[in-house]
Amino acid sequence: MGGDLAARLCQRGDLLDWEDWRGQVDDDLIDLLREGAELPAGRVAKADVFRGGMWDTFSAFMEGYDLLVSPTLAMPTFAVDRFCPPALEGQSLRRRVLGWLVTYPFNMLTTPAITVPAGFTAAGLPVGLQLAGGLHADREVLRAAAAFERVRPWAQQRPER
Image: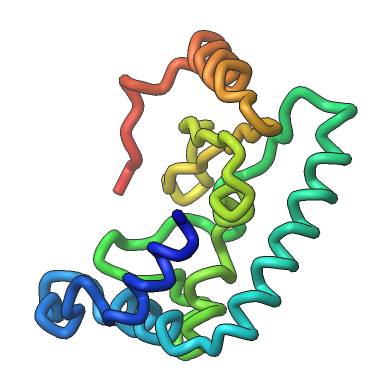
């Protein structure tokens, strides 16, 4: 019933008129939502199959590990009023959204992941450390984050800018 209900809701149209949110929500986000809503069902189905393959690969990899440790971002942070890093300005919307985040695979896989502050760049910008676990490894991820914070406290630190 869940899939049928979702399909029926999609057929009835958007639950929100995103155009009403322009000026309150980032225009690029609205454009991204619109782009996703216009994808043909075949492409959505192929993407779901691809996501299943990602899950199989990640699950097999994680059999030998408790955690996957990575940076949170592939580029230094940037001004809060910007949509993406300056190096990606003018590129496709997909690239501006996904070209710098190391977080989205875990959102797609629905596996637990957390980011903890890890320090600052030479320019004084914050750097995040991402800890990810396998399916239902929430406790392990949270324990690892707490252990990292005990060894490397950060709450009293602030970026220079």
